[in-house]
Length: 377
Image 1: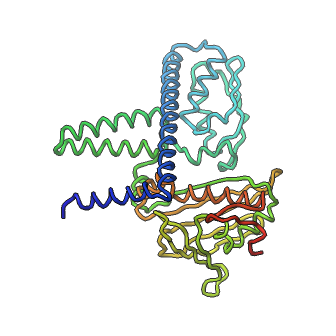
Image 2: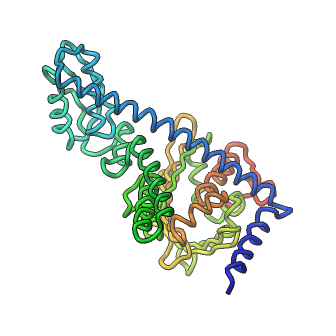
Image 3: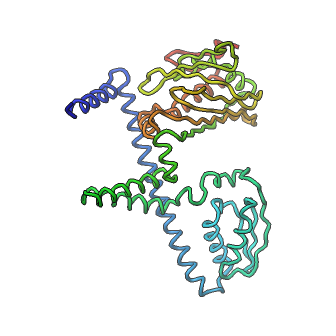
């Protein structure tokens, strides 16, 4: 079969999707928005890479000069301590550093398992005469200041400057590989692609590989504050059969499947707005606090989720976290995100409708006006 036929089918499908008289303009607009967002992300990344590189160069110069100078002022010593701690822990900004007469006082949260390494690092800095330990020890990263430790472990994520170097180097290797061709060219190109993937996702290649083929789930999370009592918010979430009335991307929910009150069948919008059916089980309910669920085995899109409710002075804080494995892995997730049809985008839109329904008593879904009094209680 000629390659022109599948290419023509693909071009035709894309033309139909983007130039559809009813929805084409909106779809094209969403793709433009994604392009604008990507441009902003790249600009921020370049700014962070440049700033990180400048700080590293400055720190290297300071360390080089510090090997020969121990008479630096307290301010210089404080900067040295900050720079060195940044290489030891991922939450150095959470540590308060005070220096008086070359005596360093450390305070703030720290993981208990890393205290000895922190103290050893600071004591070895040229110009430091003594170290006073006033650190708050934590067995786990149970405070916001330590949360970065969960997402940026050393060896897991690269600093922006290293990411920038890897992207430039990877792009150069891909270019050289295509130019040289042959076995050497293939090896160079493969190495470059590996560097680009590692730097772009900022995860170890084994993690990237599992995500590409769909073996590792993709996590999405959203937090929103609703100006309504926690009882009202929880009651709305507890009745799944109401979801199709105010969630644009949920078509149908049937509860009490096979006489099991915890089992439900869902029909939702999939890629290209095609319906996707799956069954789920409610795995945990804690009144006014938590609702958790998971799909049963062998579903088209396997996922787990948990929504937490917290009463705050403004009303109720709702935190939704979901992990799903899209067919085709990270590649299909990227295509869906480009087309604004991925679960995160849909979740954001439906949460806004939920907020409007609870705060204003009404919203719009499926082209119709929905009022909270119309829902089942």
